[in-house]
Length: 206
Image (cartoon, rainbow, N blue to C red; front, side, top):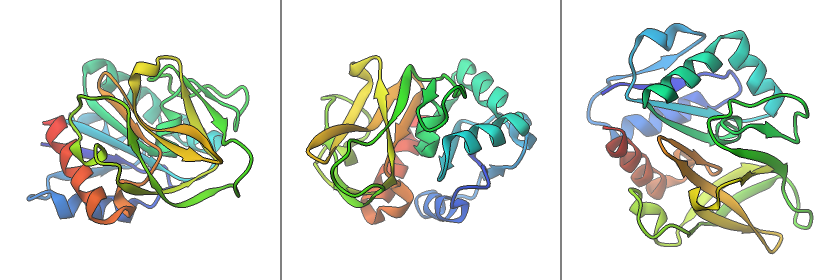
C-alpha cells in the first residue's frame, strides 16, 4: 500500500509522517514534493496544510499537484485533507476571493462565526452526524486538536461526518464525499485518538 503526503511547504510534514509511522507496520509511504508523486500510483493521498488558502492553491498550481489531485480523485484514489488541506478540496474560500479551489468537494470556506477569539486553537469535541461510517474513533464525542480561522460550508449536508461548536454555533469538523475526506482538526496532533483515526483511514483506503 502506498501513501503519499503532499508537501505544500506550509504544513508540519514531520508530524504527519511521524503519526503515520506510528500506526503503520511498514514504511511503504512516500512524500510527494512538486509533481514527483504522479508516478507512484498511491492508494491514499494526504493533503495537510496550515496557512492561507491563496498560498496553498498557488503552491498546488505551480507544482502541478492540483492536476494530480484532480486526476487521482477521478481515478478513485482515496484523498484526505487536513486543516487547510480540507479547505483546499472545496470550490472556493472567502479567505482568497476569486481564487478557485480544487473543487473535489461541493463546498465553500467561510470565516468562523464571530464571538470567541479567532483563530480557534485547542481541543474541541466532535459530534458524529452520520450513523454509519468507517471511522469509529469519531463516534464517541471525543476531543481533537484544532488550529483554524475558517471553516467549510457544504452544499450537501449529508456529507457531514462530524460537527463541532464554536461561539455557540456548529461548524463542519469533518466530511466525506465519495472517496474524499476532510478533517478540520489535526489527527496527527490529537494524541491517541488521532492515531486511532489515522489507522482507520489507512484501513479505509486499502
